[in-house]
Amino acid sequence: MKKVGFFRFQFVFILVVLISTLGGIECSSDHTPSGDSDVDTDTDTDLDTDKDTDTDTDTDTGTSLKANGESCDSGSECLSHHCQNEFCCPSGDCCDVVGSCPISYIIQPSCDNPTTCQGMRGDPACNADHQCGTITVDDDSACNSSVVCRPAYCSDADGKAYGADTCTGGKYQTGCPDNGYSTSCGKYLCNNDVCHDSCSSNTECASGYACGKSECRVDSDNDGIADDGDGSGKSGDNPCKGGVKIDCDDNCVGIANADQADWNSDGIGDACDNGEFVLVPAGSFWMGSPDGSCPEGYPGDCTYEPGRFDDRENLHKVTLTHSFWILRHEVTQTEFKALMGWNPSKFPQCGDDCPVNWVSWYDTLAYANELSKHDGYAPCFVLSNVTCEGGGSVGSNYMACFDDDSTSGGIHSADVALNNGATTVYECKGYRLPTETEWEYAARAGSNTAFYPSPGNNGTITYTDCTLDENLNQIAWYCGNANDMTHPVSEKEPNAWGLFDMSGNLWEWVWDWFQSSYDNDIDTDPVGPDTGSKRVDRGGDWRGDARNSRAASRYRLEPAHRSLGLGFRPARSVQ
Image (cartoon, rainbow, N blue to C red; front, side, top):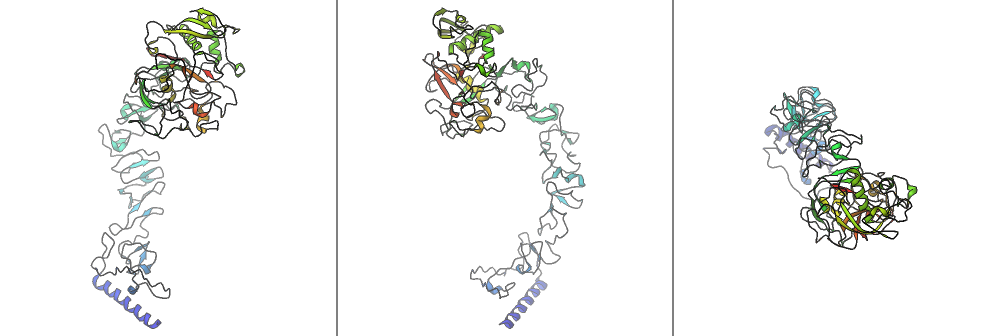
């Protein structure tokens, strides 16, 4: 048997040599031998697996030998008995690329181009006789560790594009079109056939970009002011877009324009600063929370929001046609006592910077009026038939309900009307409570998540009870972290518009009478129902669980109610 096998091997070997000598083997683009249509393609699965049998050219086994250009592990797999660089090749023919490429370059041998070398980021410089991608380079500077040549362009480590014509000249492309714009330069323009890599004015930035901090940055509303381009760390887009045009500095709610004065050095330009009040621009947003289905046009996640109150958070789009100021933080004990002569708070040990609590809805209107007088604005409210918490009617003299020894205890009830003929609170000249819509719009600051996001906090809710929710922990004091007490204002992270404690610490009174559903509300500048028995409060408090701290969460209380977890922050319309 061994002798018969030997003769069979000699016969097949002579036959292969004879075919190679007479007919030759040429490589075609599909890596199959041309001129030989009789290649054994038998797919018989009953292969002889006896390891003692010679199978390298034994066509009786049904094994198809690999043609030139096909991958291989050993010469026994190749029709020509030659496997080089993991490809079947006759010596000296196509695919013989040993030594053709620098170390660590990707070798891409083929019968069409046996010496193609693909460079990668961090590889050694391209040699003059090789290629980086599909672009021929002339010097080593084009493909160093910081600039990588790619098939269509050069780019540096930051991903900036520098041209499509050549990789020479390092990070600067020397062939970009000097025509006022250049897609090959990315967000920078071309100047004297060289792409800018920084900017000193908008004229060096492509369309849709503006120069901010020597860098071309996105200008989404094309007003020539880069969105959040100041490097201050504040998030958010240009709030003037789609609303009232305001000339603010680069630290004002994401607007980049560094020419504004900052009188109190708080990082907020004077045009956007009203002491501790933050300017909120007019605009539209989605109010409420998703129930698992999506209204048309809703940009957020339609998944059912954990903890939502199904009966009073229906998702709907609302538009506010006016900008307004709102206090950056909840009114503090110090601020309340300075105007009203009395600190009603039940946590005086917390300190002057802790929010004032134990205030009725009527108390907040009285405070707003006194603040208006202090700042030179006409009061928003007329209070009549006032009754103090401690008893006794004082007519329109609501300040008689506030004194140092708290015997009067604030306002228990009153008839409330708008001053100076205003038909809605939006028309008031002075300070007031925000409407429920204004409050949620300000709290969300452009977000559509359960909580407002902040660095490292994507705004989603994980736990609805007092279990520590990592996202909520960054922005709010609630039952999961408050240790059974209020905390000084502004200790947690603010939202994108610079507002603190919009979640947790204290529930906040707002203007509206409570309605169980938004179904009867208007879509533009809503103010809630005309009458009711309870007023809305928003935001959750130090005692409440995580579900109450969501942006869409709503609660209601009688306007005379006082609570350890109830405070407020005033607002004022931009006139």
